[in-house]
Image 1: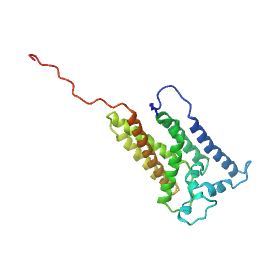
Image 2: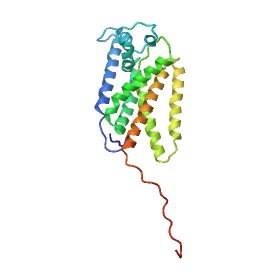
Image 3: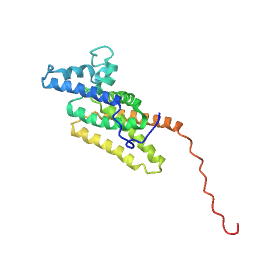
Image 4: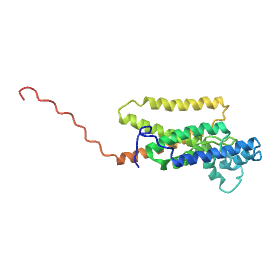
Amino acid sequence: MTQRVPGQGPYTPLPRSLVVLAAVIALIEILLSLSDRGILLPPGLRMQAFTYGAFWTGLLHGTYAPAFGGQSLTMFVTHAFLHGGFLHMVMNLAILLAMGRFVEGAYGPRIILPLFVAGAIGGGAAYGLLTTGPYPMVGASGAVFAFLGLWIVWDWRRHRRAGLSTRPITSRVLVLAGLNVVFFFGLGGMLAWQSHLGGFIVGTLAGWFLERRLDARRPPMPPFSRPRQAPRDGE
């Protein structure tokens, strides 16, 4: 696995895996939005999709009966492909496409799908552990926060390696946390911050793992030695 600095060099198209992932998410939302408006598809399709694919904490705690065998496992991933509306989907896809291009530039295209799935699972796990609410949880934001977490680790490591202050990265994390607080209260408690937290933790762990792999492949740094002083007169 080679690494290059994202944003530098000639323009490269979006990786195919990222395009396919975004296209599937967008297609699902388009079909559900058409159903909401009674265009081409019968209304009520979104609620049916939520019934089978959303994350329901009641399935973990035994208060809900699954719609099919294995739903308590598949919902850890399927919830990331469903959204509460078109705007919700657009916001998540905008960040996913930007962060996905960065991930491809830094670690290669093979990381994108595994990171998305791991972030979705981590987001679902944190949501299931930290809430018992009756409402379904949907959205790719947990997976998106995995990409953000990996980006934070990448930037932090480069600041450290260059001998620069890591305060900008710390401030960035605090801003992300603050935005979650603001949107949580602004949306009347309907923001799944637990999913964001779980995805972010997965992303940071993935970032440390990938960076350690790269460190093992980098040539060792030469030992530090003081420059030899110029001889004084008479020596």
